[in-house]
Image (tube, rainbow, N blue to C red; front, side, top):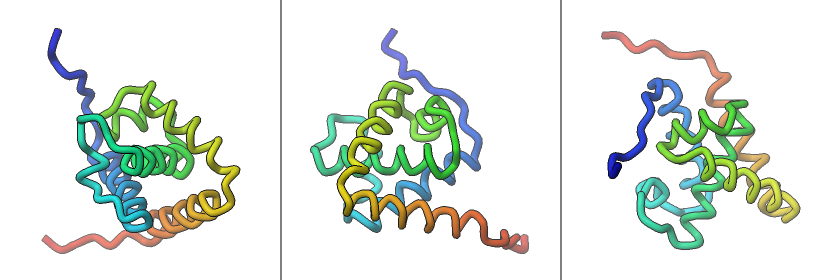
Length: 118
């Protein structure tokens, strides 16, 4: 059983997960490509990915399994990330960062959608 566990994920979920990753990358300086690596992450990159997972969880209101699938991870990874982020919200600067990121994501998603011409 060396096959990787994969679940079909809707394009909209992948786009939203990508938005969370990009917002965290822009705020932390950790490139998205590093957050998406399937190898063991260094501490800074792991923290950034946890922030992106948590951002998706709280902003989109997704259950942990959906968060995990959208990011191509296991549910336990998403759960651990969200527990870490909740604990870290006691740090005022991190709490302020998450508040700003949540507002930014909501502003993007709540804006009128622009349909592109074919």
